[in-house]
Length: 253
Image 1 (tube, rainbow, N blue to C red):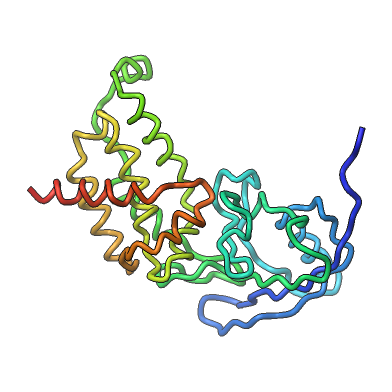
Image 2: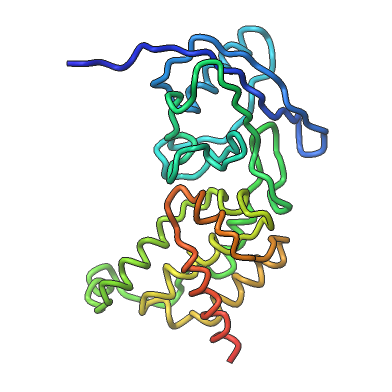
């Protein structure tokens, strides 16, 4: 039986350091030796922080929670790509084996006008919560689980709704978009309800209030660059944007 690989490499890291949302930030170079290739990217940052703490330096602040690709908290720009070079993978699921010995890795926070930097690699993504709070929910009574499950739903619509509901709100779509648009995120939250009969009762108000909140928060417009779909760790499709646009037009009449 084979065990975990004991291969180790050296990485040259350029990491964004910023004391708070007001202070100026800068890239700081770190050379990290003996990094096991089976480590996740976040475990590699943990290793660096352990060294910084031993040396009496301030550890690098970065968001993380589940470390299982579920919560979306681990959002980092890695060599210019949201969540790094592996498709449909969150930062916490990215492994050091994706990089080469002596490779230089540039790590920074997600950037958008609506995402303020808290410290180092941590950003304020509460704007996404505000969009959901504007209408990404159902308030009508749908009964308990057996009642809801008794409602007939087309298989295609159920699957599309579940695909949209996979969005974890990490913000990769926004950080990758040259316009910092939140259209993919917002459309996913609209689609997961718009495709279901339970969500149609409040459909007009939902899409209108969510789009208005998205615009109020300073997110950019979609120009079909498709970077959002390419970097989404859950593979959310831009067809959701087209659906949201249709829903928004219908809400005006």
